[in-house]
Image (cartoon, rainbow over all chains, first blue to last red; front, side):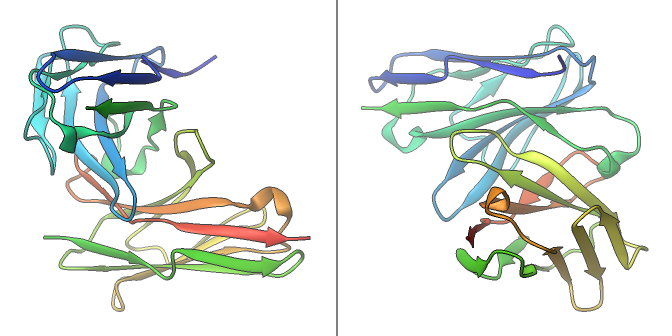
Length: 115
Length: 112
């Protein structure tokens, strides 16, 4: 089954304790992206990657890091989490051809609470 | 910066009626506009996309229109059913499939 898998689904942690949210896709997609979703603000893009070793900032990259060492994986790293990063996070992937004509496939989300 | 508005935060309609959701944007001319459905506790699921040079696109009970002069897309669900109840998101392709900007969503409730 084609899917995007995120782990963990839920995490409660404390300010300053480094954490990593993993994302893996099995569709051989070149493009992967991270979003955060907050009430009233919609989905906002954090980082995206057009292919292995190619990453770029989205609209809200501050406080986050990413890496793309393998095509299928795109982890999101919070080096020193703060309470304003409490949010619902989604990973997405899509094929690279055709630009914006490719639909994005989303994982089921990771709910992060930073105390 | 790009701003996207969706007509209302919540929309209630009666089963069997047509639901019409609006997506308005400013400051940009996207090549593509996409619509997604999101159920509680789940990630968005792609429904339809429309290109800047297309006026209308259909898929079963769904219809999307795109007016680049008004900077507006309308999303219609005909013969709506309670199972159509969900949040619907529009998304603009900002940079040839690299950056996407999403609207805040409209929560649709179809009442039996």
